[in-house]
Image (cartoon, rainbow, N blue to C red; front, side, top):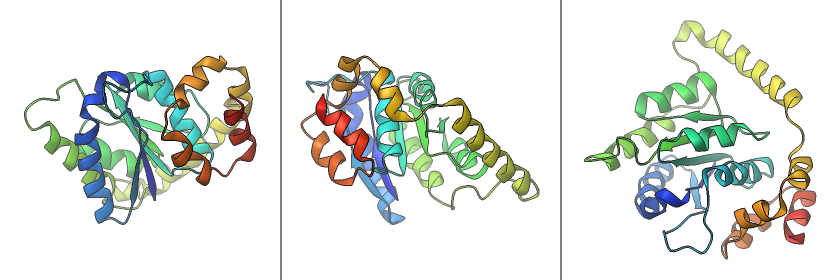
Length: 210
């Protein structure tokens, strides 16, 4: 599984720490982590939590990534932004139990974490343990055992609802403010991280046209 790490401006200084904890756990489970930034507070590109949602949608809908780890100060804004786009099912995760239950009960493809709220002494330990529980079991396994069938059924229903209530991403991109989209991807590393792995030529062509 390829995991994309996406951070907004207020939490950019924690990029190295978060990437280190995520990659160490992900590698142990055979997963790859791709760092889409922000990389530091000095980056020219300034991602907002709304941009986090758009960037998450881009990498997930085009097959560039299979899972997104994002967040902001509280984790709430990035979670809301992610869920406003098609093809993204994001959970607000604050601790290891949240991580485990989200993957088992909801089986989503993105999580948003609070990187400022309650992030004090031992914050990196909570991150590490959270990521460990995130990947400990195959997604959608269900919890508790007697609820597995109902939870898997509800997951399929939710997938169907999102297909009806959301338009294709390319239609959304064409309606969005072009500067908003351009600024989201305006990073020197984006072309090498995105285009070689993008499985949607229409979206790739549109982004390049900006």
